[in-house]
Amino acid sequence: MEIRNGCLICGTNLQYGADYKALTCFYCKGTFQANVACMQGHYVCDQCHANTAIDMIETYCANSKSVNPVEMATEIMRSEKIKMHGNEHHFLVPAVLLTAWCNTIHETTLSVKLATARKRAEKIPGGFCGTHGNCGAGVGTGIFISIITNSTPLAKEGWCLSNLVTGRSLVSIAMHGGPRCCKRDVYLALEESINFLAEKFNVMLASSLVSCEFSENNKECLKTSCKFFLAEMPL
Ligand SMILES: [Zn+2]
Ligand SMILES: [Zn+2]
Image 1 (cartoon, rainbow, N blue to C red):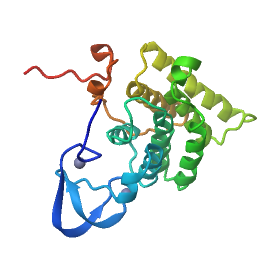
Image 2 (image 1 turned 90 degrees about the vertical axis):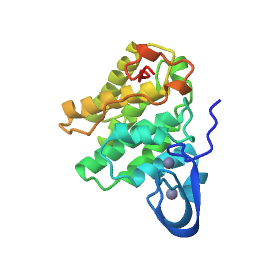
Image 3 (image 1 turned 180 degrees about the vertical axis):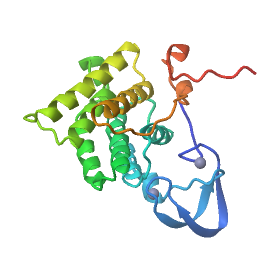
Image 4 (image 1 turned 135 degrees about the vertical axis):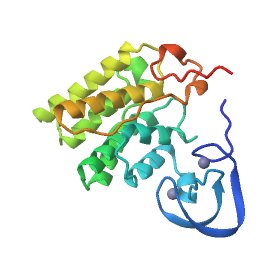
């Protein structure tokens, strides 16, 4: 079992000072008078510290200016609030995609869109991938496209696009084989969505190459058979 005591973001030790100074919270971007930060300068306010994983994802995204969904997902997944596997990843995918989308095209309704995505993603239970053939990270991409196209069951174009992106994500996730890994499936879902937006919407989101930093916490990790596996450097 993973045991972490230090910084929620990077795991290094927390340092307490005698004096209080203005520090910016990593998640909500608020400024607070505080006397504690980690060795790398990260600070998390009391409210964000107490938040659930889902609240943290929503707060982080609502206050982020990032245009890179891969980078945001990695930063969020570093928090000990996000388990190695779990249904919080079902909200994580549409949340970072909506954030990157809104920040890229200067759309101002991000908070409303995040609240909608949260409501929809909460309906996808954990383990859905194994029991319904329907990985929640993949479904998260359909939630994302349905929101940006204002799709409904009666829509024409949005209905088509939102089902299509889910389909593409699920094919990619399936072809990498089991057992499930919520990190791998998140990265694959984001990769498919970034390609999909370029192809269908002519919008290029920023992206990053992934070297997975979570493999040692996953006892079913596919290691070198996973395209995101970061091979350890020989000593
Ligand atoms: Zn830190
Ligand atoms: Zn905060």
